[in-house]
Amino acid sequence: MLLGAFVSYEIVIEGHFNGKTLLEIGFLGGMTTFSTFSLESYDLIQKNKFGYALGYMIGSPIFGIIGFWAILILNGGILK
Image (cartoon, rainbow, N blue to C red; front, side, top):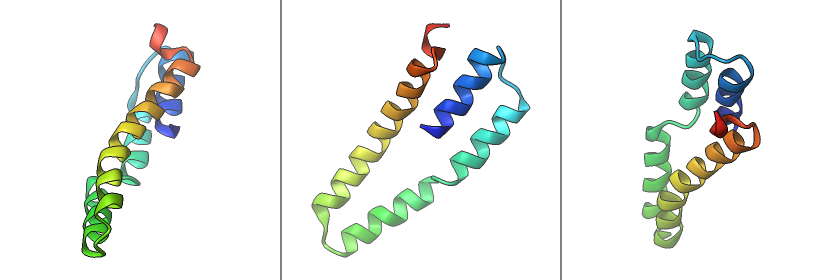
């Protein structure tokens, strides 16, 4: 959601998408890398928590996308 807030601010308020935005995306995206996602999934499977692993692997991308779109909608970015 934080990434959506930064990006929608850049697009809606400032009216453009610039290098600063790319830096923000890189920094915030680096905190939630695919390697971390994979490691956490693997760890849950190794602990025989298959239900949690499946929920995590399905829920993380879905709720990440929902959160991003929610912030865009709240900031009016989806309407431009």
